[in-house]
Image 1 (cartoon, helix red, strand yellow):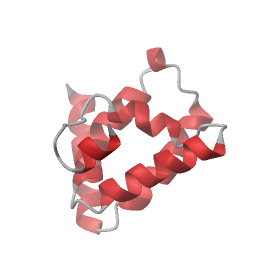
Image 2 (image 1 turned 90 degrees about the vertical axis):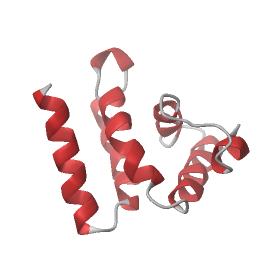
Image 3 (image 1 turned 60 degrees about the horizontal axis):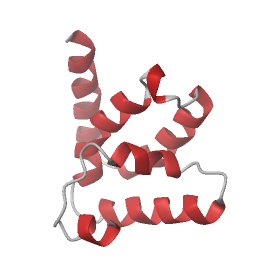
Image 4 (image 1 turned 135 degrees about the vertical axis):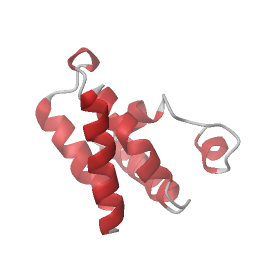
Length: 101
């Protein structure tokens, strides 16, 4: 599945939040594979940036079952891929728009 996603053969909008959870898995091999997935995804332009609002919304939902500490760890990892100030500003704006609706 990872190869299909990275080759743009399958779109990942909904499932990527499940992959993000694996970044903080207690099994270091699984966490490493998840980090590698996001590293590869980050090489595909703005893909991680475009997926972050959905990931944040899904993982911050109390029904998702992700604890606050785990959420923070995941976000610290994924926000490393946002390297441009304009992307940071736009991400904040996108998240604020979601709060308004």
